[in-house]
Length: 174
Length: 298
Image 1 (cartoon, rainbow over the protein chains, first blue to last red):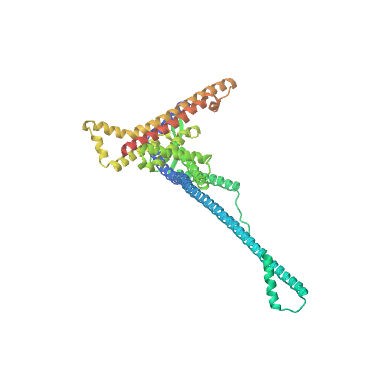
Image 2 (cartoon, rainbow over the protein chains, first blue to last red; image 1 turned 120 degrees about the vertical axis):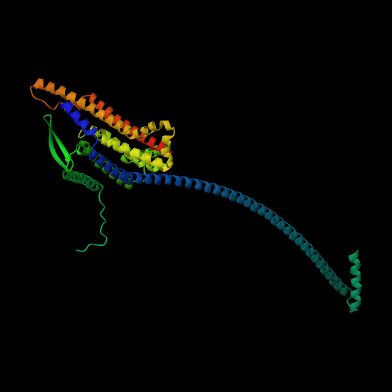
């Protein structure tokens, strides 16, 4: 029968040891194993290793960058603090200096004012004495002329003048 | 004729390279088939043998008149699988070299990546870090045995693993590897352990010698049983349809079998016997090989 013949073919072909099949299988095993290792396995492992290396490298880089950023942050914070301190100091100095300047200016002005007042006083006194002297001289002149008119004759000039001076002084004192 | 210095660089288009590679694959396939034909015709004699009024085609080796040198159809299956797998490997190699490891892989490359990394993990888990270089052999077994077991689905020639000579090759290879790694890692202690309780030494020796036969007969039996059951189902359905057609149309119909794949339950049986069984047997074979070798290398 058809089916039984086919089955017997299948079993007979496969069951009994066959040198040709054996050799073919061994050769094909060698070929396929060699090419699988050479064409697929090694390139794929290199491919995967490249990727994992890159991932590990990136992670390490990120860690390093993080540490660096942390140290930079610390440094900048310190810098900021010192800058703030310096600014405060500068402001304080400026205030102190301004106060000193202010006081200096005020005292200078006072001194100047005092000097000016004194000078004015002196001037006034001087003027006063000068006017007094003039007045005295004018009085002497007037008295002289009056006496001249009165006497109307030539008298000893020196003697008269001394007399008149004495007189005026007495009058002035009174 | 003078060309200007700033002549454009011609960049080959992707489509043309694809056509070229397909043409190369087809040409390579034909060259391989022709070479195989030349080799077979120079080595074998073709003869028709008549047994019980039935003629049989037979290829005999030219110089030996023994049944052990007959060309069986499984050899053709082996050659087809080898050529197919080689082409696949070349395509994968080109794809790996072209692609960028930092881009998400997809398609065939993703499958290969998953396959390679899982076989590597399996090897390290079973055999330890020292035998990590063993992974390509495990990977080869996985690919080849799966392809060979599934080959019955094509229906052209029987699957190679339905041939005892083929499975015995793998069994003997495993046996040789067990002895090799046993001697490499344990020296003569590897053989001493066989005689440890001296009374049990015959059982130990028989047990060790049975390993290649148990491995190869398990695989062979499972696949051959699937093939036989599928042949019975196809034969039965063909017989039924032939009888039906002969009775209805009064003709001598002989093509009833072509209706079988269109019946709903036949593909399900194919899935069980060809795909599921193929996968399970491949996995069992790999697992047992790894277990035996790890036992020997401890």
